[in-house]
Each structure stands twice: as C-alpha cells, then as structure tokens.
Image (cartoon, rainbow, N blue to C red; front, side, top):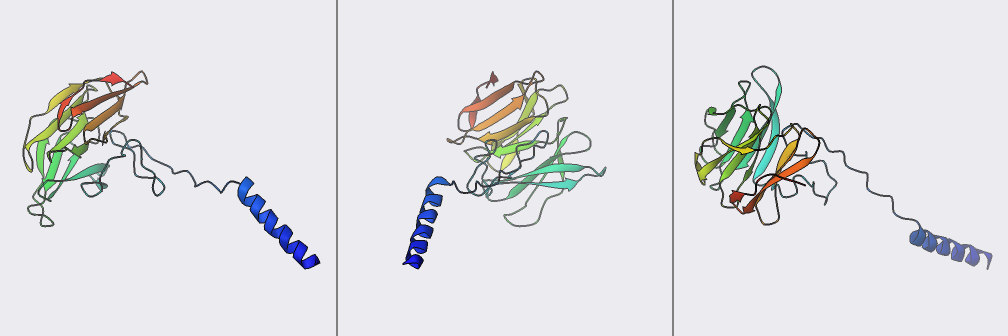
Length: 208
C-alpha cells in the first residue's frame, strides 16, 4: 500500500510538473551584422532572420576571402537562371569585381571589374525573372545598384537609388519575390526602398 501511494504521488508530481513548468526555452541565437551586408545566418532551426528571411540558399551564398591587400572581404554568390554561379565583391580599388562559371558546375572565368566606387562590401539578390542585381553604398552615402538587363547576360550601368545611409544596411526578398533594401540613416532612423512589383520599379525611400 505504501509503495502504491509513493508511485501515485510520483505520477501526480510528474503530471503537475508538466502542466506548470514551462520547457527550457531554446537558447537565443547570436547574429552578427557585417557593414554593408545582411544579417548572418545565425538562427535556430526553423527560425528565419528578419533581414534575410527570403534568401534561398539554393540561389544565394555568402563567403569571405582575403583581398590582395590582406583584408577580409564579403563575396556574394548568386545563381544565374541557367544554373551558373556568379560571385561579386568590392575590390581594394573600391570598384565592384565579379567572376562567373562558364557552365553550371564548371570552370570559372577570370575576374572582371564592373566599375563604380563603393564604400564597403556589397549585397545582391536574384530578381523574380532571373536577372541578378547588386547593391552597394557609395562614399557619398547614397545607395547604388547595377543589374542584368536580361537573365544570364549583360549588365546595366551603375544607377543611384538616392538616400543618405550609413554602413548599416541590407537587402532581402519579400513574400511575393520583390527585392527590399533597408538602411539606417545618420540620424538613426531606418528607411526602406522596395520593388512595387517583382523585378520592377522601386518605391523610393520612406521611413519604417
């Protein structure tokens, strides 16, 4: 009888413990922010970063490499519509440089300058129609972008998107596939500029 009472008491304690004691919460992830780049993927399984919530790892990848002057630079890799990867980074001359696969999974081209003069590392996204687009902040604090005029081929000239931004900015894609650029101004406020429809037409900067 005494043994049965102990067993019943233990069962009741377990039941009460399960009802009134919350499970141990998942340890919070630590995310790092690289100037001129989106939040690093440092989230628990199943949780998306607000800044990169629509980055598709099958079509975008980010790594670091040592530059010709020994500094670490961010290399943004985007997959072309035809499956070839293309990589972009800011050179020590402040210009944008890139290289691309000659065939999907195949050898790489040499490195080629895309011009411009950027204040820090770049970021980029693939448009919904497959065209790649790269973003970078200029020394005058305005945001600039350059994009493929057709999927897999042929680049526009650098074009200003305006704004006065610090190095605290990032790009991401919203639920309908449009590109979004968020950036912090020198006064501390955050501003946004987004595609009003996939692959086309930016809204202009507004405070968020």
